[in-house]
Amino acid sequence: MAAIKRTYINNQIRANEVRVINDEGQQLGVFPINDAVAMAKEKELDLVQVTDRVVPPICKITDYGKYLYRQKKKEKHTKSSQGELKGIRLKYNISPHDMETRAKSALKFLEKGNKVKIELPLKGRQKALGGFAEEKIAHFMAMIEKTISLKTEKPLKREGRGYTMIVSRKQ
Image 1 (tube, helix red, strand yellow):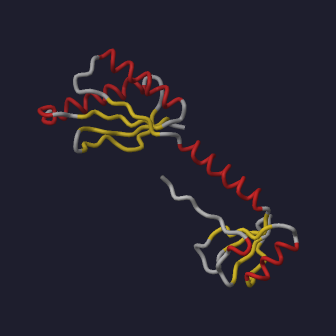
Image 2 (cartoon, rainbow, N blue to C red; image 1 turned 90 degrees about the vertical axis):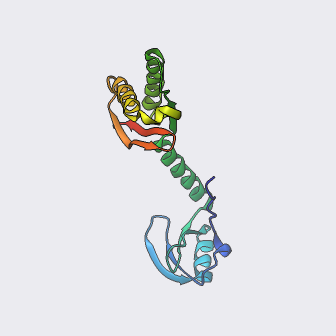
């Protein structure tokens, strides 16, 4: 779970001095916190702390409700553009028909803009025949690439229990 970043406004800001910018993004200068809050109140707006990673922290004179709305909208846009990670699990002795079915579902995920994690777990003696498993995944990839061009996010890699790779649709 991601940590929720708290946004400080007006008298909640705990710095002695702040760098103030207006709603259009123009820099007004460095002011004592009391003067900056008074400037915001004068314009009937709020002083919102934008970042605390620099000294003095950067604060913006803006409407707090509009600021939160823009932040949520921006966060939603970045989440949607990244796409989800969907998983497709192949078996060592998978039948050709089952592989076609999984390829169709992988295509659906990729067309929606999601990334696909392809897994092929190995058990017992199967671990000794890694080359056969790599061929299975290569065949599966060839089935998908007939329809759609792919970009490899994470190349095929042997991990503890088998092989994994992550692919996405080329833009």
